Length: 323
Image (cartoon, rainbow, N blue to C red; front, side):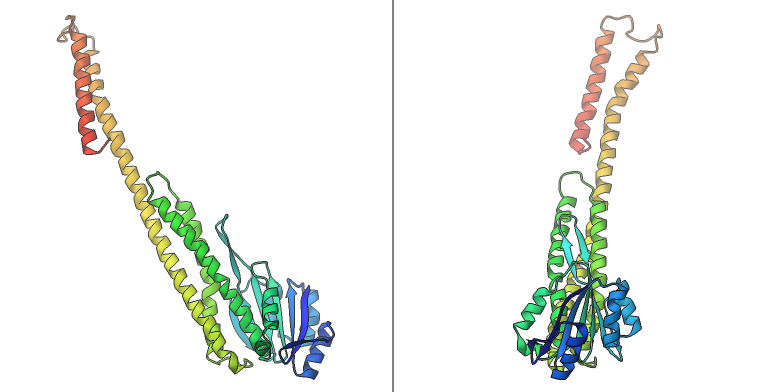
């Protein structure tokens, strides 16, 4: 469905027809541009937009199906940009992704949004408060949306960093825990986050360097700021991946150490128990020639012997750290 449709002339919202055809025609007459926002349109709903703005069929197919990687493509009708907004769901420890697809021409920008990861109402309102930026045309809108998407990556980084610290603490705690599953799922979320953020670096670099047609030259420096932010996000992601790999290795080492300690304890207890068992087995064979079998002191002596040997072994194992 259409969320908003507005025409901007000289950086200000114009009072024009709110239909797609009327807004586009009026934007061309006044020398402005039209900004249309759509939320998860169906193929039939998008058909009128496709016809009005003469969009390329390949980009239209991507917009309907969604699930695209971040990219920037140049067509005769203009630019096609895919962004992957993200937000971190802390209680589930998952990164939720949406998708924003932008069609950009000389007199129009179409914003197709899938998912709820990032809303764009605040972007429109903040730009309408800056007519000097809106006067730059669709390029300014493209920058504002990109900037908002990339800014939203910071809370994701913070959430991942917080949970990674928790996992580190859990691995090196005195409690016998094995957070392997949690580490694995965090590694998967970091990888998916990397797939959403890293591919965007190259398109933003092209915009920053003026290598993309139909982009206002005055916006190049604004895209430079987005590019720097993306590089910083990419550095954080690399650190998280390396840290999680190290934490996973440390956890497996801790598991191995705990298993060895358990085996030592088991072996020690077996050794403590085997000598009294051996003595009891020998004196329980019921042979008449057994020494001390006819003595009234035989039984107490054997019991004391078993206790003394078991106690000695226990003390020795205790001192060596096996028990």
